Image (cartoon, rainbow, N blue to C red; front, side, top):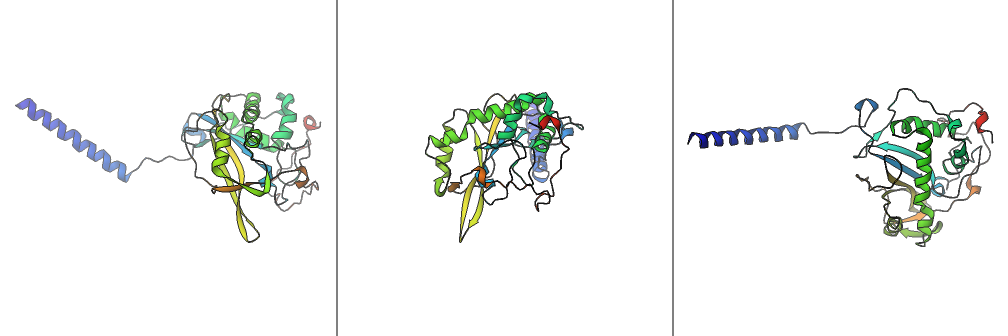
Length: 274
């Protein structure tokens, strides 16, 4: 009898404790904040962002890089380091060293596939440096392997070809259904993507344009993985895939360009003189 009463007492105590913990969770919910270097959070994946220059440059606000020639393709914007919840892990080291001399064989690819089309005209060096320092150093990869991973996975995704075989080609007059674009992307085994769009005013109407495609990649940079998180969609059911050509780029390298406030003029670099 005493054992039964003791058991009931323990059960009642456990129930009250569970109730108390539940109340605490209601009033003091567990929240997550942006990951900072001091948090010690592990990098669970890499997040490759590819930008479509046809949308970026449709208003004529892009400039020809001072070195190389951009590919008529999706261009690499960055390769972020993230945890499994989609929080960005960045600036994990107080000091950063970036040397393009470590990877001379990648320079042509940097100029064509990871170029900066912002104005005024620039050689792209600041962008590569900033990306490596913000994200690359947080990864498990060295500098060369980090950039190789971005190039290899971009080539493996082969987005333009994935679209073309599904009759999705750049056009200013033909719109495409979002579900058809998703279907084309899913045809690439293992490819898990997040699509970003922008909405612009075109005359009296609004148009949704394909802007970026984000791809989840394993932390070692070798394979596609299913994205363990989702992002809020910025796309409508129908969208446009605007064309891009080199003639859209301004070649007048005006360093007093109105949009150049965030531009850092780099010193003349001998290793970039190709």
